[in-house]
Image (cartoon, rainbow, N blue to C red; front, side):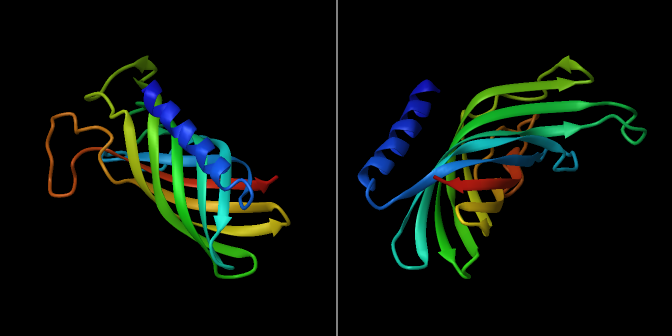
Length: 199
């Protein structure tokens, strides 16, 4: 796990060094609303932090590539109520993630983005009704996701981003190991709201 994290960090630093004269960069922070597809809970009900740094480089007047190094809290939550007989469930999955996106400026204030991200799981915790509990096999240490999103420029150097992310590969098999067509297990699903500040 540490080797994968160091690889992501070195790759990020190398990218910023290679394009040091042409890149723009900054910091980002916001919230992620997440769920685990395939755990039979309705969501997204789990809120988490979304923090990191980014660099980007324009290849045409409207097209650019952006790379980030992010810390993201994903998972799932079910709060107790009369519908579920006052049972609770909490799953915390903390990732270090490296997204690489293509961006297109369709308006002077608006930008669309799409790309992939590779995440490394650095911590996981699962509980039911207030007690630590494991509902299935171990989670995969890596998470490959597809991302789409949009930026809106609030003011110079400050932009807000809304992004949807979904795992391409299952992050954990179903508890009984069953599969059906494309459903190979449980998948991270995240809707994030993040502010990007260019330094």
